[in-house]
Amino acid sequence: MPPPRIVIAGTGIAGTVTAHGLARSPAEVICLERSAAGDQAEAGTGLNIGPNAMTALRLYLPDLAGTLAAAGLPWRRWTAALTDGTPLLDLDVADLAGVPGLRIRWAELYRILRRGLPVRYGCEATGVVRQADGRASVRVATPAGPEIIRDVDLVVAAEGRYSRLRRLIAGLSQPRHLGVVMYRTLWEAGPGCPIDDYGQWFNGPNRLLAFRVPGDLVYCAGTFPLEPPDAPVPAAMKDAEILRGLYRPDSGPPSREAGYLIEGVARHVDTIHWARVQEETILYAPAGWPVVFLGDAAHPMIPTLGQGATQSIEDGCSTADAIRAALASGAIAAVPEAVEARRSGRARFALDLSRAASDTLLAGADPIEGTREKAGPDFRSALVRLYRDVDPPLAPVHQPGA
Image (cartoon, rainbow, N blue to C red; front, side):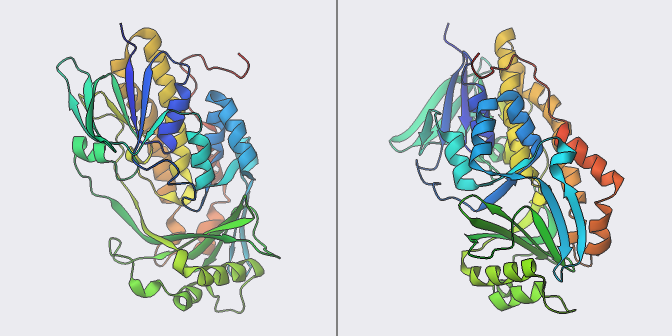
């Protein structure tokens, strides 16, 4: 009897972590990636990975956790201030979580996660059909032309926020716009750079967020309110002097850190990636399909707490664990519902907390009061829950040297 066949569509974060978790399983795992090999060698900017993801990786994939930690910088603190230098918040993230998070470049994250996996690059899952026996056939666009992968026991759809398979199976869902523009860029730190660990600087609801990543680089993300919430990003805002004006304090010159970031954004305005902050309905398991959605395909969320990539890592760890347990019991058809039951509440908590933590970014917000509330016991308790409550293993976990 052939081994169970699993197709992973998309080798971003959730897909690759799932594949690593299945490396020693008896299943046949086929990884499809629509981009060409090396296309993302210089991808993106930087990101912070929450300590809950590092805890999950240490629990399920300790070798991978160690490799990522060695390639990044620890995220230990979360500070916030006004752009004039007035301090608002200083949280010890590592103390709240028990372990630090991680600061890393997207390109390096992709390189590490895809290394050693049998990825079929340039291949995109374009459709899925239910077979009479309950399994699936997956249509794939390849460089050599279309093909069909038949007798698939489980499809892991992890193609990101704009998942083609989710649209085909579950239909289009309307995004919920927060009413905030977010932009990102990356530049060389240069001599005398005052930016180190994760920090935020507010001028009214306009916020700069920045931290260092390996390679002596600074990742910077800026936000400002958008009205109406679903309006396009105004072209007039994509201007260096307009952006300077958003963050310059009326009370006097900016602090050293804020001044450095304001000028950095202005110098690199042509490299900025622009987006509108939004979220969508959580969906892991479409009813009646041998399909499970993971990562941004399952739960596009507001990035305020850095939980998008973080929850994708949790998804991959937990889903691979559920698959291994199902392979041991012969119940692989039950995996989608098992993942839905295990992950949907956790993702809902992260999504809701991320939205609530975005209150200081909205039009008319008071960043002083809103940020200082985050130093209080209620928010700290919520962060402890977010950072520590990862899914415990269902199946035995391979340990290094075992």
